[in-house]
Amino acid sequence: MALLTRAAGAIPRPRRRFIRRIDLIGWAFISPWLTGFVVFTAGPFLASAFLSLTNWDVAGTWKIIGFRNYERMLTGEDDLFVMAVKNTAFYVAFHVPGVQIIALALAMLLNQPLRGISVYRTVFYLPAVTAGVATAYLWASILSKSGLLNSMLGWVGIEGPNWLYSFEWSLPAIIIYSLWNVGTPMLIYLAALQGVPVHLHEAAMIDGAGIWSRFRNITVPMITPAVFFNIILGIISSFQVFTAAYIITAGGPANATLVYNLHLYRSAFEQGKMGYASALAWFLFLVILTFTMIQLAMAKFWVYYEGEQTQNRGAT
Image (tube, rainbow, N blue to C red; front, side, top):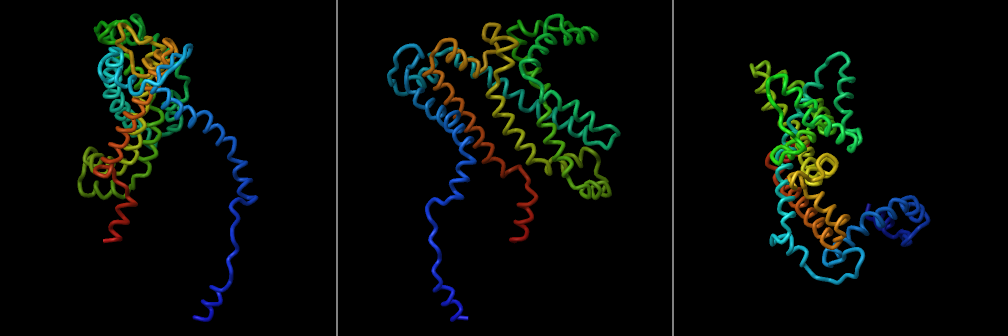
């Protein structure tokens, strides 16, 4: 055995050249994507970090002003920044849980073994593939003073408000519109529900567990990875809300629906303050990153992964 080992060790291994022909072929295949990533993603990402430290206004010259743009945001010099943060926080606080509740409820209904269930699933998913601007104009008509929503409220004796032109109701109207598009999280919940082992429900039913008890103690723990994933995506997309506020209310009335991305857009493309807009973009990036990291850190306390539990039991 020792002789064989020494003989094998004596065989010289061929040295690998730094770049081979197969490597060049691989780089050639990914070069279109790599070029697009550098030019349209990584390049602007790094350029915006530099621009956030300048006072560039597109038309004129620029100079480096350090963290002056960030000081302007955080010291309250920009009143619209404070209002945009408040409106966005209000939107996130109601949009994220609202979408999760509605999507999970629809997924549970669409998980029933009914005839023609695929048609119902398709219908409820359709809003996810509908153009955002088109749906925004549709909901602008629904939420108008004489629109469908107020007409339905009138059937039960309630006089609906002027949703889109009321300081108190315009932002809730945007949130109501956002709850319509639950197709993607609904589909994720539906897939998670179909992965819940049936024998767990059967064993619980034998022990006398009711529907609510089985949902709380079996279904919810088993689908927590899907809940976690949807919450992460929901928070990220909620902080970047733009289309509804821009198309339906244009940030009004009296900046009641001025969300963060709309303020950023106006600073960059209407006022030409690219330096300040870049600082706004980086502040938003840091906020989203912070929330994401917090969620990732907290996941170990409530997200259940069956594979990890099996490995831990095996190690024990």
